[in-house]
Length: 319
Ligand SMILES: [Zn+2]
Image 1 (cartoon, helix red, strand yellow):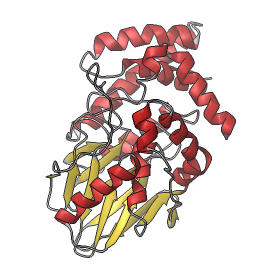
Image 2 (cartoon, protein in one colour; image 1 turned 180 degrees about the horizontal axis):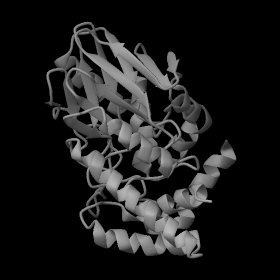
Image 3 (tube, protein in one colour; image 1 turned 90 degrees about the vertical axis):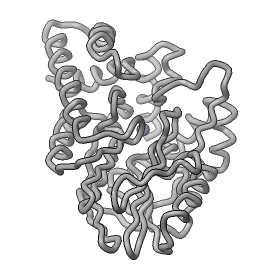
Image 4 (tube, helix red, strand yellow; image 1 turned 30 degrees about the vertical axis):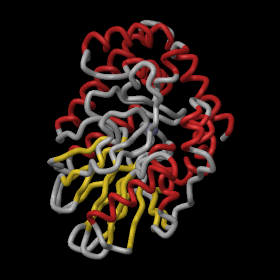
């Protein structure tokens, strides 16, 4: 467990240069001289469908797109942001759009900006995939520690942070009725992490795709268990849902085209990595080559350095 996480960190750190390493989980950088303060911003909530509201990340590093799904009898929060302060902001935004006292809390994966805001919702019911709970049990606190070391601001935001255990666990899929609107929680890992879980709002056809499909952001293979094969299969599954709007966990709000765009990028990356492995190239050499290749082919996409860990994942699962 500890060693697995350490391995993940070593892979990430070894794979990228020292300055790039700090950016692995960013979508954009704060302007020079600006302190980062990744707390969910209030007063920006938008309604994107009859039952779904989003507090957009506005591409602030380490702030997720937060979802609020409001039914007649219950409300579900998706990814409550980093630390108690974010969670409190989400709770105040939720109170503006819902009077339900039954609150569900859902997180797309274990990383601190998706989970630790949950501290502001002590009475919410947490429903999670078994693999997502496993990630949190094994590495949740370690990731909080890793983030807290990155800056004094993050240390302050994450002071005393923890991730509460799920009240209910499911294996592959679980549907929850919020009253007039149903949400389907679908386990789609291991991809970005072991426990990745997507959420589909049936009546509104809105998909929360987690880190599996984001707009113009290279996919991050963040854990030793991260798998290109599962990632591609999961994108096929998500595509079949027929979503009309897709909310990635970071980046701009989008439509279903980002599922195909991420699939095409990953499939091309898989093909190139397999070809280079067959030619006898090392994972490291192939990674460095493909970072440049994909940077040139996808100039609008942020974080091309993530190609390195994607190549590692392909090498590991290619005989
Ligand atoms: Zn993440």
